[in-house]
Image (cartoon, rainbow, N blue to C red; front, top):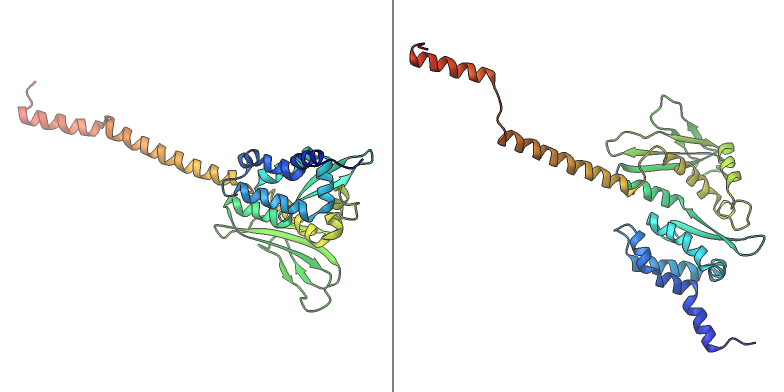
Length: 268
């Protein structure tokens, strides 16, 4: 039976694009203040339009898709750019939605915290020169930019803090990266990020480990500002107490007593 006009309209109004639009207020309550909700909704819709498989999955299970999009909004990342929503068909039918933070998204979350001035992450190839020992502040890495760099051998990441110091340096071998890949539930699929963008996943793996050693959320900056305000308030209260209160100085009392005795000639 052909689809009637009314059923087509009903389907369109309840499809994933409509659900995203209808959820604008909800998403706006989750987004950080620097992200415009209308821009976020438009980008989410554009992501759906460009990914036919994701559109199919979101049409079949709008609520499942919205759960992944909600996480994207909470982090304040860009759907289809710094945050990828991937849908996989389940054996029993239906879809699983997985939200994957791109390595650029991980870096953005680090910068947003406000404690880091720069982040460095590089893949080391077999044709590169690389050296790092525990007594070194940062790795020594000479990429063979214009030659055959060979195979990916390892990856490293570190951050330069606002005071100029270097964070903990994360260095991971190929074997360590492969352990992370093996634990990923998306790695076995042909359209997995591990298959499509393996180098980016290597970088993401190292940067994700780095997030354990540096602040990564806007909450950190808010906490720093809150602490500064509390310190200012405390100093203000202390100053008021000194002005309004009476300070007892025994030396001053002794001086005043001696002056009084001299004035009366020591009479009691």
